[in-house]
Image 1 (spheres, rainbow, N blue to C red):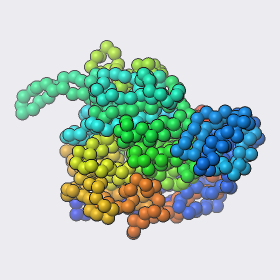
Image 2: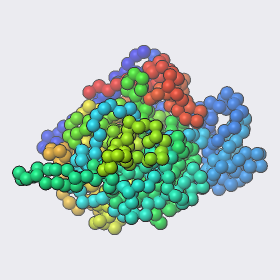
Image 3: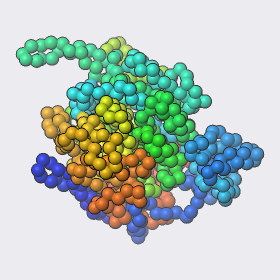
Image 4: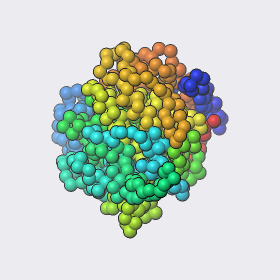
Length: 619
């Protein structure tokens, strides 16, 4: 096996009057075949086909077993194709009108015939999508949102709490508790059934944890503590397990079952519901703390297409990067473990940050399980940023299987006789924390201006104000660690109603945030597809890139001018024949699943000759 050292990627930022450079190098090990560079840094192009990786493999093997697939048709032909399948004896499960698609259970032997149908543009497996159970704990102290986490995010003095902002949490449901009983009329819709409004429940527990990290009030953790001030001791009330935006309205869209799994088609239905009911339910954000392995290009991936549809509709989509950053048996870190829909160009894709129990940002590290980029097939630089996600405490769903299974993760609240809270780790938690910050940004901006921030603007603000880690490369940390205080400050100062090209800053830009008694300088960079853009004027005027109809990273639509190109010389892929083999992430094989979920441990050996990308970072 040979090693290829990649050129350093230089990120620029201003530190007071001095210019500081953050250089990151990525060490990639590739098998001993001739290396091939591909335009745009993406994966090698395979033979043209309408089938995704899973279905192509099944068709090549002559597998005749029934398949649940998502069929994408030419515009205006969805009903006609669905009717033909019904007459053939196939079963149509659901329709996805906005995507010109429908889900059906078909005969396996018909895959090639359907591929040849001129009215069909693509077929994708209706993959099992899952939320993680969290990474193993390491014995460190838990972080409290109202204590260490709030301070680490620079939010201790914020006057915003997410009021009048609604977030659609597409997950395993919601178990009601006093922490979500603030009179905000939270809603619940079950897409594991008919998608109708019903009584909230969460038989897994992941959705409840995510929802209360975002917007839990922490009522059941409220307690008195003694503090010393001006030489006198007095009591104050604290709510250590309060969510980031405690007044936000949660719209729970259940798509996962008691095992934390569900169909991609259920997520598509939930996203379409959120778009269609955006005005009535006032949905500004969608949180997707779930994912499945990437089986095809983002141009054809149904889940990515749904995310881009939501973004164009003006909804900000926050997605987990995935928990496939390391081999769980050896602890070895690997790249290209991003899951779908984290590979959606316009999604805000979030990796997990370990705060090590302190508010001081200098000791932060990216959790080893957090999925690194680049995104499979497209080669896009992901994640977009990293956020606290390790050992976070939020409400535990008493009736959820996670709460029942992991007694050691239960955390007591005000009532020490019963553990009301639960501890989880993962990029799911990091996405939830980011969604909470986005709610604060929306509220801060809406308090001053009538025109809402676009998803692209929110993403640019989060990246621009992020705090780069000197111990991680861009494919590991994106633009850096989430800076809640800085993001809210910048969102509050931008007037989205100003015409394109006009100056839209309404207050002086001070590119640093006070955290734990220190002034921490923003990274002041934006990763735009295959380019890294920096400079103090980057977000000071309304650029065409900030429009919500622009796909993030589209160089054909937006030209930034002089930029640093990620480009084809920076990412080295191996040959097509090896690319189509296997990559091991986490406990199993993530890119060769048959759609029934990630395969189990010991499927292949980490670092074997079939592995495409593995290795470690060079400081």
